[in-house]
Image (tube, rainbow, N blue to C red; front, top):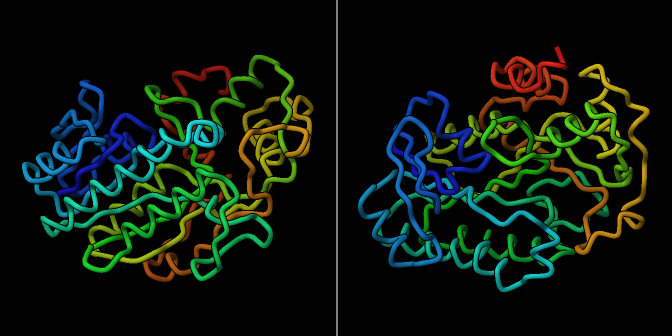
Length: 300
C-alpha cells in the first residue's frame, strides 16, 4: 500500500511519516526539507496543476490530507486565506483523485457542531458556529460526493510531541507550568483529547481496509480544557494551583467555539475493534518517548 501524506511537516504529518508503518509512506508539503524515511515532494497545493502532476507521478492508493489552517481565530479574520487552504485545496485534491481513481482522506473537526448537546455521533446534525467550522463542513461534502473514493475523519484536541512541530494543547501548558507561569484555562469548553499517534495508526488502518464514509475519532477521556491542564500538572508533578478557570466569554476569542462538544467514537471502535487511548494512557505514552524525556528532563 502506498500513501501520500500532505502537510508533511505538521504534527500529524510527521506522526504518519516517521514511524515504521507497513506501507510505503510518501510526504509532500510546501517546505523543501524532506520528512520521514521515504520519498518527499515539495508541492504548492493551491495550484491544481501541480496537485494533479504530483498525484500522476506518485500514484498512491490513498492521499491522507493533513495540511490545514487550524488557527480558528485567523480563519475568522482572514476568510479568503481560510477558504483557499481549507476548501480550495481539498477541491484540487478531490478533482485529481477522481481523475486518477485514488482514495482521499480528509481530516475534519468537531467545530462542525454548535456545542449544545455533545459529545456527538456521526448521525447528529451539524451547525457550525465559526467560519473555520463552516469551511471544514463544506470540505467534507467535497470528499464524500459520489464518484470519489472518499473518507472523512473528524477529530479534535490533537496532542503529542515531536521536536520539529509547533506546540499543542498539551506541550505549551507543560512548558508554561514548568516555568511557574499562572495559566487561565476555559472551564466550559468540553472535548476528548486525541493522541496523535493513535490517530495516525487509525488512519493507516482505515486506508488498508479501503474504508469510505464519515467517522469520528477522539480520545476516551471527556473533560474541559481547564480539567485537562490540571491533569497535566498532576501527571508530571507540577503545581495544579497555577491553573485558574475562566469562561469562554471572558477569554474574548474572535471566533465562537462549541462549548459542550466532543466526539462519540463507537462506530469506529466497532469497525476496527479499536479503543482510543484515554488521557492517562496518552500521557504515559508521551512520557515514554525518548525525545520527550530528552527535551523535558525536569519532568523525570
